[in-house]
Amino acid sequence: MHRGKGMKFVGDSRISANGKPFIPKDYSEYPGKTEAFWPNFLLKEWLVGAVFLVGFLCLTAAHPAPLERIADPTDTAYIPLPDWYFLFLYQLLKYSYASGPYNIVGSIIIPTLAFGGLMLAPFLDRGPERRPAKRPFATSFMLLAIAGVVFLTWQSVYYHDWDKAASQGKIVEGVAIDKEAGGYKALEANTCLSCHGAELTGGAGPALIDTGHTADEIKDIAKNGTGGMPAGIFKGSDEELEALAEFLANLSAK
Image 1 (tube, rainbow, N blue to C red):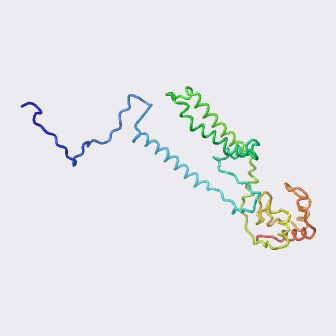
Image 2 (image 1 turned 180 degrees about the vertical axis):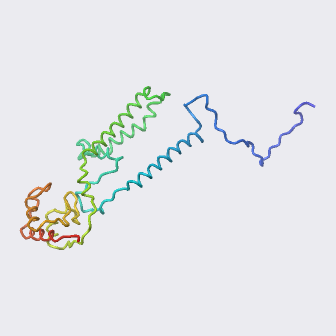
Image 3 (image 1 turned 90 degrees about the vertical axis):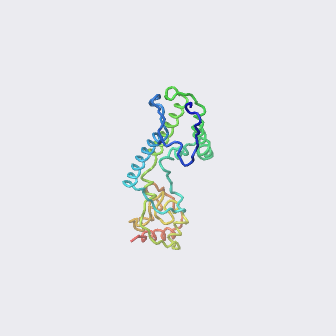
């Protein structure tokens, strides 16, 4: 009888066809160039993500997010500041060619061209080289993008008035304000609320609660100005000025 003659092979679905454990392919012929996605590459990604997450959680625990006062929609002098990763766009909108009548250029056209270029980079540079020196187009474009973002972010941080930003968002003790009083109506009629806020807690100008000034001092400031407040802002009558000064002199959070 010849070897193998008359033998029949029967398949059985209850028996696993491959009982061997998963073993990644051997990439030893290409050292440092490629590796198995699972589990080698995925495990490295997970470890890096875990380290970053732990560091981020430690940072948020050590430095909680600062809180500001309750938003006041009537305070038109409040200048919001975006998070750090949008500061470069915030700074871009300050330039004359990207603001005002050209606002669409800075808010839509320039960002669209920049991010659109990043999306097209893999299609425009399809060479096999991985070293940056041999990929001039992709390298130059990325360096230009990074330089632009870093420069605009630095400009935004350097020229921002941080003291003013801290004062306009500072949480102050609230006080019940009689908005029907003559002094408050005098403030409203002379556009004082646009700088000092509807609740008089400050904005572009300082808070008007517990100023520490007498009525005469307040009248002098209203007429002649002080600090960043120019003279001639108050244009009301003497009766309005008297009511305003008495109102603010007696306005206290205590």
